Length: 345
Image 1 (tube, helix red, strand yellow):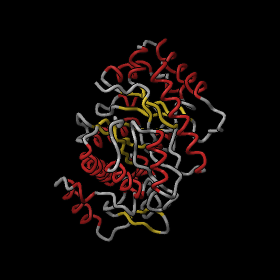
Image 2: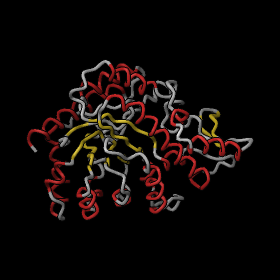
Image 3: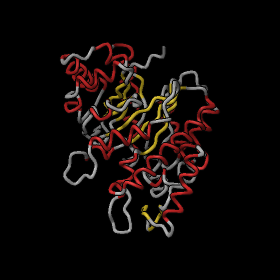
Image 4: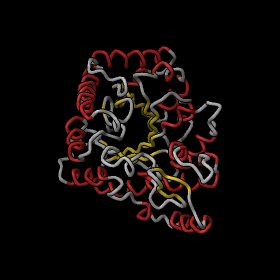
C-alpha cells in the first residue's frame, strides 16, 4: 500500500516565464508528486486558466484578449463536437504546446529523470463552473446561464483530462488529476446562477469515466465553500482547500469528512499561505495550525489516524500571478513541512 502521509504537491500555476526554471523548482522541492506548471506570465492569453483548455471547443473564439461565445452555425459546431466526444477521440482534445509549454516540458523532464521517488504524477484541468463563469455570450451573459453549453463544456473538459491521462500513462505511475474550481467560493451568493445540486451533478458527470485504479481525482478550491458538495461526489478522491485561511470553516463538516475518509478519500491541506505569505512563516507555525485542524475534527468524531494517513499538503493556491521571488521560499517551506509531518506526526 502506497503511503501518502505528508506528501506535498503544487496547485498548478507558477510565476515563471521560463518552463525549465519552473520545473527545476518542482523537481527540487516536490519530488514525490511533481506536476506540470501552468505559466500565465509566459503567455497571459493562452496560459490563462480558461483559454488554456478551450482549444477545439464549439463556438468559442478568442477576441481582444478574451474568450467569447461566437458562432455562425451553432448547431453544426455542436454536432461535430459531440461526434468527437462520442467517438472518444481524445487526441482531438489535446492541449497544444502553444497553450501549455509547461506540460510538454514536464513530459520531457519525466522522460529524462530518475522516477524512483515519484509516488504520483499530478495533472490538472480547470473545472467547468470556473470555466463557464469566465466566458460571456454575445449579449454579455455568462455561459453559466446556458444549459446547452454547460453540458458541452463538461464533456469537453472531461476529454481534456482523458487526453492528459493517456499521454502520461507511459510512465507507469499513479496519477492525480485536480479539477480547479475557485468559482465554487462564490456559491451561495444571490448573484450566482449555480446551486449545490448543479455542482454535484456537474462534477459527477465530469468525473464519470475518468476514475480508475491508477487515477485519483481531486477538486481544488482556494476559497470557502460548501465542502459537503465534494464529499457527496463518489468519484472525487481528494479535496484540496486553503487550510491557512479557511480551516475554521472546513472543520464544520466532520460527519461528511469522516465518511469521505472512510471510503478512501484524501484531504490535501493548503497549509502554506500564498497571497498572505510574508516569509516569516516557519514549519512550527504551519504544523501547529495543521494540528489545530486535525484536533478540531478529531474532537468531533473523525479518527485522528484516518486524518493523518490520508493527508497531503500543498500551497494554499496557485502562484501564477505572484512575484517569482515568492515561489522558491514557499516551495522550500512546503518541502520542510512535508518532511516534518512524515517523520514526527
